[in-house]
Length: 112
Length: 114
Image (cartoon, rainbow over all chains, first blue to last red; front, side):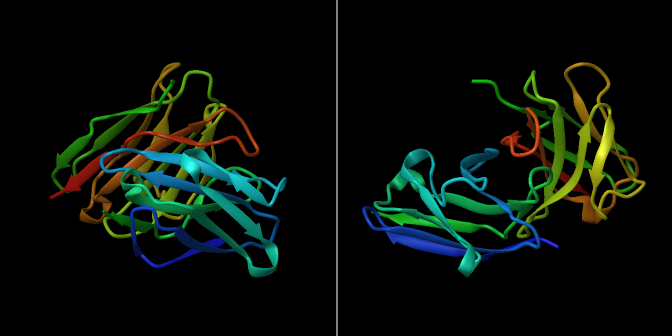
């Protein structure tokens, strides 16, 4: 069975600071991993995805994530937070496509 | 840019009533999904649909739920007799193909069952 754990339901950073959102997964097969972002009153938007190619994946809005098989992690980072990054972030896993299994989400707040 | 749309954005219904949530997937997409998110909980997979039939469903998707693609554009989720615990945000998603095509999500329908 596959599962995703996001450490920290809420993360607060200052504008310009590093953003680090943690995601650990469990999968019996090589996983495909995703980060989605949800702005208020909007749907889920794909930030980036890992599909067994390069382990460092670059996404939109300056975000990137690194797949670390030994740590079963896929943490999301951004070097410098912007006020517009405030949103809820979801990590998800799928078994080579198909249904997405989501983590519980991390709400990111950015302080001026 | 093409997007997935959902109607209505909000729906309030009485327990035991039938509701139909509507979605218009992106036009050239072939795979369709419904997910739901109960307030404060994870986004959960309900069902996937391909080639006019259900390809996978979760334990949540019991006999009270059904999906349909009645024409070439709409994809609907019907709940036959709503329960209080069906109150949630329901998301529709679509993707162009498999195995790892991106799933594009609609803005959701917030369902409140009283």
